[in-house]
Image: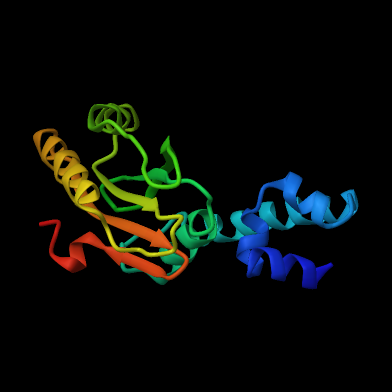
Length: 180
């Protein structure tokens, strides 16, 4: 079974992110194996989450990168999530603000800022995935980030970074000089 999973999905991450129906069919409808996969997914996500809470989060933090890769790198469509932070840069909430297609996701800066105000967030980290596997941001990614950062400044909210997450790595807008 493991050989079939790795042949079809390429890796454990790919198998975990696969559509459950595909896994079930590939495994000859072995529901006990599918239940094990789902349990493992929940445990993995909880472990990654618990490593983030109750401490300041920096966009260069390996724990954050592990968390985002575990939650986004193998998704089949783009997800745009926002990590809302308090004045001590501790995580208040992590929310998916948009789910798109294999090549794009639509989010609205006003909805992100509205949620910041509801949560009393003073800073945010933006993240989205590229299902293609390449973490290189598009021009549209850069334009959207600038719109969000500009709107956030009006409310005194800091955009610490925008991370593009993919199977082949993570790109930081701040580190690349696209976010000042």
